[in-house]
Length: 386
Image (cartoon, rainbow, N blue to C red; front, side, top):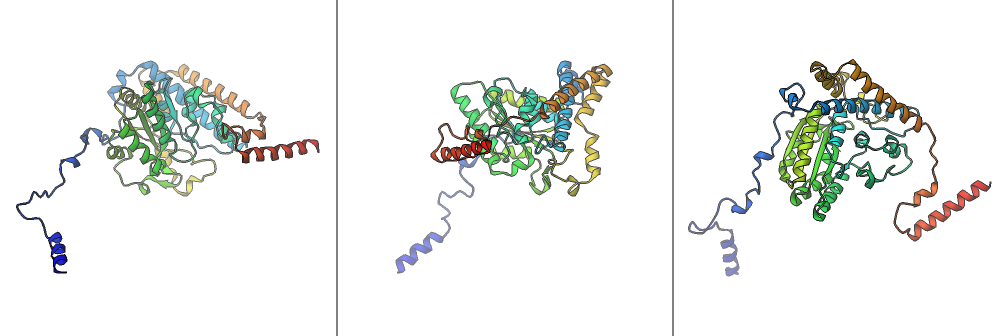
């Protein structure tokens, strides 16, 4: 008993002054990289309204403008289609067009885009047929296009689940020796999901060629950013995972394009992932089913309207003599032609086969699915004979 008490007392005693005792952790605790270069700028990066515009290709500026105008018209037309019953739901990106367009334009054809449900405009800007982009929101199919053909992953309705998928594809591409970068889009609300953190951690550890693009539009449905995080910015979260964070004015299309292009190039040359936060604003409600007036005031919305991505780029181009009334008219007419075609095609009732419910679930149907398919077929045959 005395021996046991003696041993217990000895364990609790502090180490002798002569022992090799370290009051701080050993050198292994030190970070693998210097956190300084990973930190984002204190203010969002901007190009419009600065001398940096002088070094931008005028053709790029004009193309960005045309795509923004087309994107705004696309948003308006899709919103109208919900009121006409042609779409079940539409999450608008009005006010966020600079982010959507720049994301698509920053990628090479061989790269992959991983959009959320709100990013149909990014998919359209990448070359996807607008009707195919809206098929999910129409309720016809799980996705309306072949992801491999366009290198656009299916629109992700669950928040942030597309991010680990992007990391997996990017990592696999690198292992195969393919020169491919994945760009994954997510909203500020998605950064509160576990998938976001898991994806960033894996991407940084594996140095996967992936770019995480956060569109911080102020609200996760009705929850403001201040109730989601106390971080200085969402871009600061990158440092904790060992990747650089970039903060950019999300309504400055030129700045967003430049930052994303740099991040994609860095990933392609083996530099690993980057987290880019674009500070923007959701002018419209969360979806057509949302009443945004319940959680924000008109004054706030009007303040952001003054920083509209189309207006600030149009003003810059006009002042520099790169855009005249004829150029504005051409952009507007092209956008209207797109909207008219979209409206006409969406007004046609699609021909749907209920049996398609079972066609793309498994490569080989399970016994349960075969049983359910047979039951539905019998019901459809009986209905047609009645």
